[in-house]
Length: 379
Image 1 (cartoon, rainbow, N blue to C red):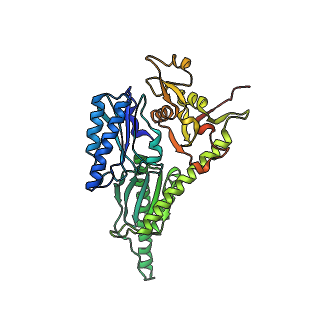
Image 2: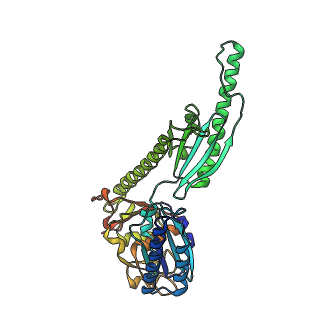
Image 3: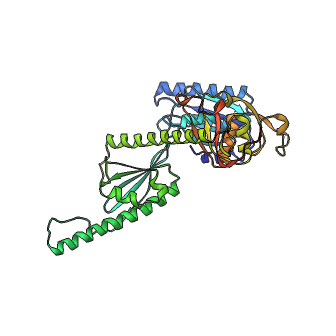
């Protein structure tokens, strides 16, 4: 999961009101429950010390939420009398979460937005393709490409002139496959997608895949369901896309844990994996985190640490925090501080599900895969 959308939160000092809100049903009883929930959330923020302008901004934003447009709810981050960021959730919170704290409360975001990959779906035929981006906010158009329109259909005759025509048809297919692959690769880079799904013509799909750059081809899958023509969508196609997304997540988790097991501290060779709050804090301070590994039930997630104004100003002990920079360091939760650091350095964040819990996952629930290796300290 990339946290680049949290960028607006990184340059504000806080403190922060964070609210995870389920607007409920779009009926009269739902409206009444929504009103009571908003009132209770605002009361909680006031009791925790939030200033009135910020509480009022949260109240106005929550009151204006439409259940139809936000079926699973939203998370709001507010400070200084304004809502700085409002983000749509993909899963309903199990009860509202409202907090007033030095840093934005980020960890619930991991499970409520999930780590479903951003998927670029290409609907292909022999004349071109339409691209659709699928993310938490729903599907959106991501461009199209039109290749040569003629000749694209073979004939059944076998004389010399027709064989010559057949060759022209195959050349058109190859040309269009190359053009689709080029545009698809550009759309992949521009959209920062995690996964590419090829839908449509059974001959053109593999031809396009073969012409993709190796990095894009490595995250590309095909499905035989659906096509480019209007009305070709189906439940089978939706199921195939969803299965591809889930398989991608499981594969990423397996690959990350394999790398973590191979590179964790405990050997006398260079390592590219660390675990536990002190080691991860060191990596965050030096911008070395490539992927932050988070086990949601880990005991270290709520461990106290210290943070300064900038996301890389983090320390395990109060005495170390004094050297972070200007300003008074504040006591924060380890998970929120490390997630803020990950967002600031464009690191990936990967949730390790509780069913994966074993001796092979990060100690305390927090670990990191690093951007470069380092020599472990001699003991």
